[in-house]
Amino acid sequence: MAWHAKGDAGQAITAYSAAIEIDPKDALNYYGRGIERADSKDYEGAIADFDQAIRLNPDNPDYATAREATVAALKKGGAAPDAVGSDPKNVKTVIDRGDAFYKKGKYDRAIAEYSRAIALDPKRASAFIGRGIVLVDKGKYDAAIDDYSKVIALYPTNHDAYLGRAVAWTKKKEADRAIADFSRAIEIDAGYAPTYFGRGSAWFARGDFDKAIADYDQALKLDPKMSLARKGRKLALAARAKTAAKIAGQQATPAGSAPPAAWAAFNRGRALDNKNDYDGAIAQYGRAIALFPTFRDAYVARAFLWETKGDYTRAVADFSQAIAINPDIGVTYSDRGRNLSYQGDYDGASADYEKAVRLDPTNPRTYAGRGTFRMKRHEDTGALSDFETVLRLDRNNVFGYFGRGTIRARKADYDGAIADLNQAIKLRPNFAAAYKSRSEVWEAKGDRKRAEADRKRALRLWAE
Image 1 (cartoon, rainbow, N blue to C red):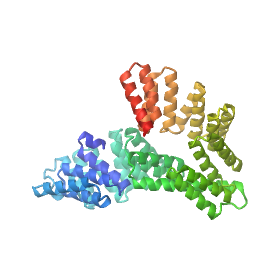
Image 2: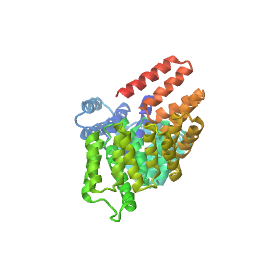
Image 3: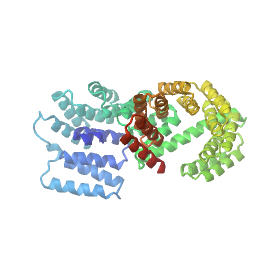
Image 4: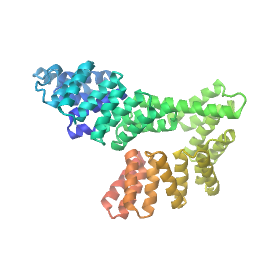
């Protein structure tokens, strides 16, 4: 965590506490907070954190080792949390005492200590953040938001303040505000999995399941053991499928919905799809279609797998069938257009992309698809316009930055290209194509050392 690297234990503790608020079953966060507490000589608080980490993941030997070392330190005369310091002017001591009370569940006493620290140092971010975390736990969301907002006013790039305020907005069921704060936190630190999980949950609450799935995927890339993100992803996939099937049923047949047997086959296909068993999934999607020939979502799911396998003819056929069932969903035209372009049918692809934008003019995905197509055709002016539109609609769209960066490189705007590709990599650290493109820009700028480093990174990522 960034605050640990900076040596600010108080900030690190509040950051870990915010992460635990988001995912209380992540053992690593308890372990990290325990380390920070042990370093701050809050041995009892550290031991409690290590105990929780061990309960959540008893197979990790590091947790038991850390606990043993902390117990030994306590036996040698370490101070207990209630006896942390005696100098009321020592702000850090007061904050540590607030942390200790919070850990014990003594929220009012914790708030009193954080408030005392704020009175001693009105610009101490960790005191406001600590109090904000406790206020959220007490259900006093507006007061917590006020504390986080004060930190942001003082320190506009404080990641933990945006993260904490986003959690409070989420608790208040104000998804749009939560998304804005989670997004800002990601801009500041794109490598922290719980932030993506939090934003994914907010997207889910808004009913934007594609964006929720993308954020859950990123959380799992950063932390493959985050069980809540895996569960959230499954729920989002199910919700997306249910919504799509409902639309398909309304448009397709008087029956209105697929029979249970078709749904069972579709769900089996989805489970196999998640395990990368593409042939098995295709067979199950086919069975779902056989049982319910107007099962639009099954055609779309199977089309994506045909595309993954490089069978673009079958992908186009399935996307076409989905369009026949419901001709009013823009992204399906974009998906078919992409596969037509792979086949060299550029006129057909262009027509589909235009249709997608007309049907869904506020969806960044449709513009990203058309922009990518135009970029491949070296229609740079139109492509640049599309990528600019993507970023106006979604300032955290990785493909918007990647596409605009690529176009800027073609126009010899190397500094602009580097800035965009840096942002794409920040948003998706394992984006091999972005590293490759950036290596080419470094080469054009004459920086061969950086070019070679990016080229090697791209090759490693492609090999994984």
